[in-house]
Structure formats: structure tokens, C-alpha cells
Image (cartoon, rainbow, N blue to C red):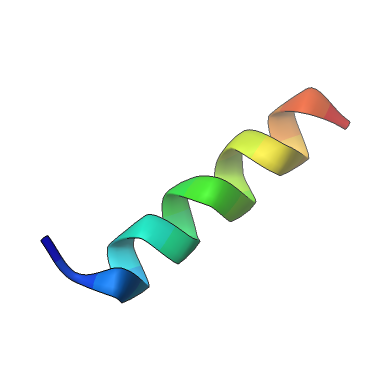
Length: 18
């Protein structure tokens, strides 16, 4: 699991939440 992937997923989720 790459950290970049996690960051990307977090950003995506954040965008979806906000």
C-alpha cells in the first residue's frame, strides 16, 4: 500500500464530504 494512494483516497473522500 503506497502512501500516495492513501493521500489520494483521503483527498477524494474529503472532496466528497465537503
